[in-house]
Amino acid sequence: MITKEYFEKEVAYIIENAIREDVGDGDHSSLACIPENARGRAKLLVKDKGVIAGVNFARRVFDYVDKKLRVEVKIEDGTPVTYGDVVLYVEGPSQSILKAERTVLNAMQRMSAIATKTRTFVDLLKGTDTKILDTRKTTPGIRVLEKWAVQIGGGRNHRFALYDMIMLKDNHIDFAGGITKAIDLTKEYLAETGKDLQIMVEARDLIEVEEILQSDGIYRILLDNFDYEDTRKAVKLIGNKCLTESSGNINETTVRHYAECGVDFISCGALTHSVHNMDLSLKAVK
Image (cartoon, one colour):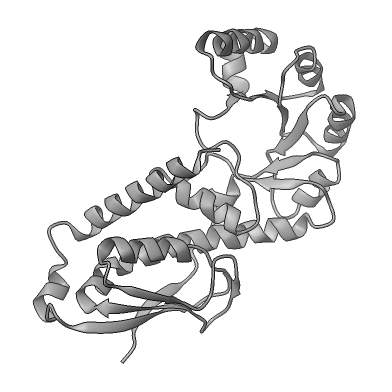
């Protein structure tokens, strides 16, 4: 995964771009009817049920918009919430509260949905040694927020992007001319460039698993769209030679069955691409 420094930069980019996109040359609705020196207080209200996420992101947004805004957090990231809960209060210049409102809500609604779905999968895996992973199937421009939400929900992050791990999938293998050739070329590339990246290889069947195992230095084998029986066979075949990951056909019904096959990880794109935003609102406190 990315470094803490890079993570912080990504979050800063998102906030800067979101405010640019939403505010433009000014929040004219607020400028038109709210005095510049007016002060106010608002509460972030939950109108749904799930796991809250994005509280620390909200702090950063409010601080970016106006350092005079003060945030009082009542419920921290990763906490189960229900209808009527108040997550935080924000107090300060009224114009600034309204300027930050939509960016805070948009991010927290989506992050909370992802954290909620992730927590569901984490709970389903209790009692096993298998960990749930996200994927790169994220919303362009806000990947760091969505992967942050997976962590808040109790899941783990897969690679962050194309640059922090080698992942040889079916198209790489087919374009390269086969599994062994793709692996050999990858090792040559890493040696030539001096890059220290883990190598992960996707297998489409047990025959491909056997071929992958002929090469040393493989960090993880991805068992893509394997059924339960072949997953168990693959895990036994791989043993302690490298880590294992299941993907494809992963949902709330199947995830436990795949975990019981003995895989180390299960990756699920639905954590980030198939969620229903949590209903949140920011209401003025009179």
